Amino acid sequence: MTLVSLRSVPHPGSDSASPAEEPVLLEGTQGWHHFLSWPGAWVFALLVLTHRYTLGRPTPLLVAGGVLFLYFSLRYTGRFQLTSKRLMWQPRFGEPVQVPLESITSEGFSALPAWGEVRIKGSHSVTVRHVRHAGRLAGLIELHRRRPFQGEVDGTTRVGEVSVLPARRVQEAASSSRREEPGVAVLRPGYAAFLPAHRHAEVFHGLVGANAPRPDADVTVEVLVDQMRLLSEAEFDVRMREVVLASGGELWHADEVRSGPASVAGQGIRLGGARGAGMEIRPDLAQFEATDRIVRRWAA
Image (cartoon, helix red, strand yellow):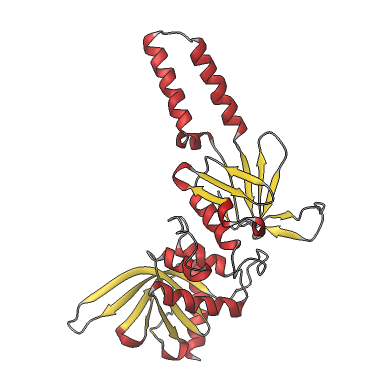
């Protein structure tokens, strides 16, 4: 399964050379090991073991079970692709089906991440079965069929000047004790934000509303910030402030942030703000240049 593919798919009705294409946000296909999540696979395995150690040879029941297992294995396997506008399902046998996200109602959407299953019903009905990270697929569908994403994004990244990296919130107490909390740092030219890693549901609901279902753990804070980059820069900044408030995070304006030196990669950066709270970030080589460029702009 791939998140934010560089490939794209043509709009319905357009030919393969059409410039009007939709970037793929998530795609996946079932592997044979995914059928371990299907109860029928365990029933068939039990039949095989039972007949092997009792009768020692195939029986009509075992043959029939094998045929049914093979039929359902082929019938419900295929490949899906999710864009910001539609879910496309290509079964192993049969015609492809695509469902515009705007056509999906609340009653027409359900997911069982533990079983690797996502069901949607809109202009067409599609059930994706036996996939890894089904919870992430369900979360992204829920995200992109609601405001502020629905009708406002085309799947391309629009917020470029941002650094997103792991961080720890540090709270210095008067007694010299120190409390740390893991999370995600989001650095922009005008501010620095911290989002607690375990508050992914609050960040999700801060984006699309409290009436949305609780997202699966696969919909991490990093995934949500990555999706927010599909919004316009102005919308990104507005929503960032909202999710900071919803998740109990922190946001410091550039003029109140005190940063330590960041001259070499791996040294790390200590950012401090009001109320004794701050955060520590340690960018890797890939993140350091963008992070250092933004931090230097705060001091300008």
